[in-house]
Image (cartoon, rainbow, N blue to C red):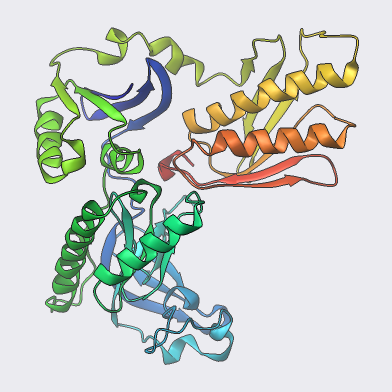
Length: 398
């Protein structure tokens, strides 16, 4: 049974996802609206940098945002044909946009201390069964949908129900669905129509936020499989009423129980505070006696696997494999728990047996399938380091 806990303390919210009482995901929402990723703005082009085929756009934030030509050009032509990937090499950005021009953009990557936000005109509106991509005319399916017949059925269904010119990414939750997908398409296209209308009717030519991205809890509910969340417990009346409205708007939540437990420390009540405290630890012990260490740098996250107290059998290779196997399961768990994103390098204990390396790589890929964000395992490098990437769910953790 999966359940979500939302514990509000002053302006801060602590959000936990549990599976049969065990902590799967944990986030802190500081309530400062620092996260801009997914927000849609009316922006004003300030500076065009021809040498970089890029521009700076004022979206009303402290730092101007950055856009590249490839994030402005359409992905398909008027006939619906995919435009060649390197078309930007044949076009000057100054021929496409002008300084002072009003432009509709979505934040794709949040700003940091050095840089402003990265934005794009390629809008993506996520909903339960699809992510709408207006003005693309491209329909694709999630890589996690492996059945070819189901892929073809879903693509046909979505294409038949999308408005002309719109595209979509079909999500894994769409498997086996039909009427629910049709309803979902109608709702998300209404959202897009409302956004377009706000942009077209705006005469001020000033930067403005016109659509805020969904909150952590709403995105969690959308991302998780239908009917997987049996219960949501909150300790704030404000959150309770907000989620009541969200539940009414989404039929797939009709079986989800929503509880209000006012003036209660829910995390303490569910006895998961000790698990939360462990998330600050650099070293994580494994049941076999080995351990892993997690070190984050500005460029990447390094994870080191060690035998520790584990002596194992007389077969050294088997002992090493056992620690690496257990470490792999724990690493997949910790990446999700700590929401570690970006480049991740795993330094396993050296294995001489190539088949054992293949088994470890396959195990890592298998365990990462449970992660609701995008992951990519690149495999072992020449230095025998496992290389992979993971997309942050909450970018403010970077």
